[in-house]
Amino acid sequence: MDRKEFLSALGLGSTALIAISCLQACSKTDAASGAGVDFTLDLTNGAYAALSNAGGYVTVQGVVVARTTNNTYLAVSAACPHEGVNVEYQGNQNQFFCPAHGSYFSSTGARTAGPAQRGLTQYQTALTGNSLRVYA
Image 1 (cartoon, rainbow, N blue to C red):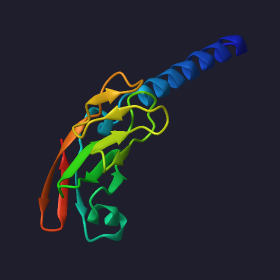
Image 2 (cartoon, rainbow, N blue to C red):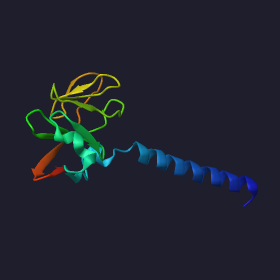
Image 3 (cartoon, helix red, strand yellow):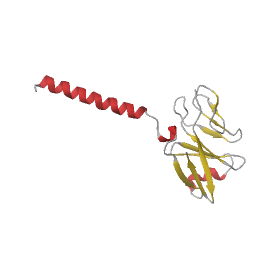
Image 4 (tube, rainbow, N blue to C red):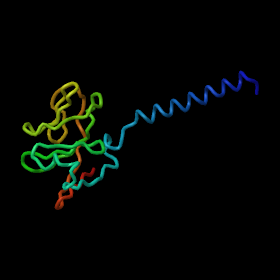
């Protein structure tokens, strides 16, 4: 193999590796697709202190977990389907909002307004004592 053939083969191999990396980066994450979402929050942990108040929320593992004014818990995928910016929970309106471009989502994650073309993925929640399980 001469130098030209070697460099040509090296270029093709590098291109293939870059293409594979790009395709993997463009695939959905577990939280976006709902697959593999199953975790438990210890509500006594200070990292989740916002959930001790009605209207409070936290973002954990690509999921927004919120406490409603009725003291129930909601969980939806954090990334807005429009451009991937994390949504926020508006407790007084019981809805999710994307601060980047103004998409709104209901408490179940359904799109209600804005440029997003689809809703957020909704997850189940189960409270047992001070443990809140979030799962698909």
